[in-house]
Amino acid sequence: MYVLRAYVNISANDVLIKGISIVNSAGSEGGQAVALRTAGDNIAVYQCSIKGYQDTLLTAYGQQFFRESEIYGTVDFIFGDANVVFQNCMIYVRKPIHGQVNVITAQGRGEPKKTGTVLHNCSIIADKELEPYTMEVKTFLGRPWLDYSQTIVVECFLGDLIDPEGWLKFNGDVALSTFYYVEYGNRGPRADTKGRITWPGYNIVNNSNDVQEYTVNRFINGTNWLPRMGVPFVPRFIN
Image 1 (cartoon, rainbow, N blue to C red):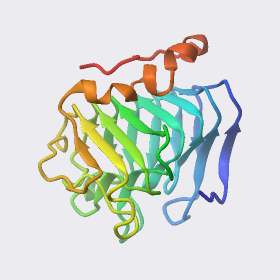
Image 2 (cartoon, rainbow, N blue to C red):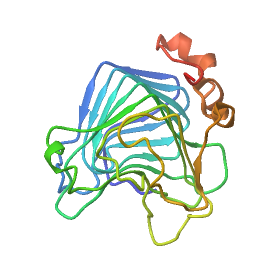
Image 3 (cartoon, one colour):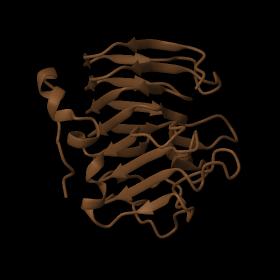
Image 4 (cartoon, helix red, strand yellow):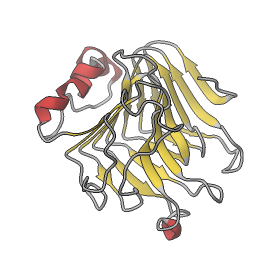
């Protein structure tokens, strides 16, 4: 996964990033403009604001946790191949350049290993600039960057900006039978899954037992390292 530049690059284990704002000011026409790249095990980002447009946040690899943080962007703005959980975060979708669609996640798992992106109890809404255009600009929860892309959206608020189909193809039919996308227990105007895509890799789960492996406790071993970081977390799903 080639990255041209990152405004802040964290390549280390056992790191706490707390209470700061990171902005890549390249703008909507600047192409790929990573604000934050995180690479390593036991990285916690707490009460931070991460702002950009395309490719805002690269969670490259390792066990990572984002809590009560704000992430702003347009195209593929949460991407990478880490084991990462976003919990109680605000995800603000911005206005892209004319003709573009918004895509929140682009998880990059290229083989069937235990990595993926989990959004838990997050709110996904339009920022003020996009609000008047939500009927014109399509916004999707994610698309498969690589063959075995894995993204889990659990107990989140899905604002009315989300396209009813929910998810987008990346490049033709690539990965449509190997990716693993799950929605469970979401709420809000676009939580209804009746209009969602019907690709083989898309799953609607009705039993919390089927998604327990994606909790903070099990997916990133959070109970083993988050307490010493001083970051609050919910080890399991709410319901």
